[in-house]
Length: 262
Image (cartoon, rainbow, N blue to C red; front, side, top):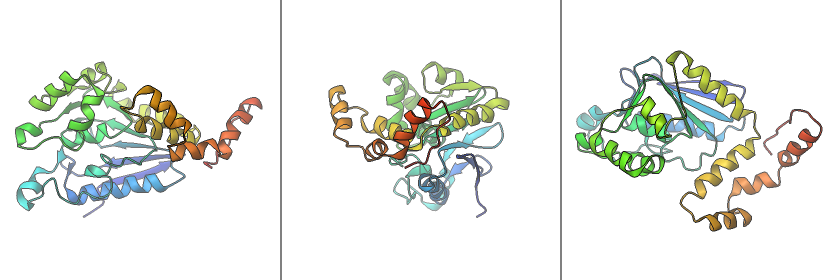
């Protein structure tokens, strides 16, 4: 199998272009390959922000490869690899930011890839849908778990039960999508956002994601106790790092900080 993931690196930004014609469907081998890519990103200290996208203007990803399910007997218990389905939907210890640049239709598992990211930038012509109920399956790689946390419950239920397409504009209205831009500006917008993130202190960026994920659903007073008790390893490491001293020093000296990630 030729590599269906095209990778590039520039100034700490990792671009992941998923390209498996005709519709970027995901079978188990593809999922394992994507998992390898996200694991590489997780482990590389030189990479600070990732962008995941697809080529063209028609489709981001059609999700689970149902032909593989029908012809090869692939099911939900398949070995999807590190990070779960598509390599990102269950990589809960990936504390580096990931931006989804959604260029076209995000269907089923394709929508769930976007839900696994921290920020979603969508082309004006993109749309999102979870048609699993009409296929005899469920959106259990993030649709069921994540979508009701991102949009009002009744809206999530409507999407999950009917499988209707939600336009990029509607997704933006509900706060699911950060920005909607013309397709021609999609990657420039995502890259500028990634550049801004990559300029931050690496441990501070990772600690932010670690803590925000870790306190989700926790009563507010307890969140403060968790932080004070140093229950988050990356956050605790950040507090005793060289970068923790460098930031205020650089600000006082009116210069750009030199981050070391330690």
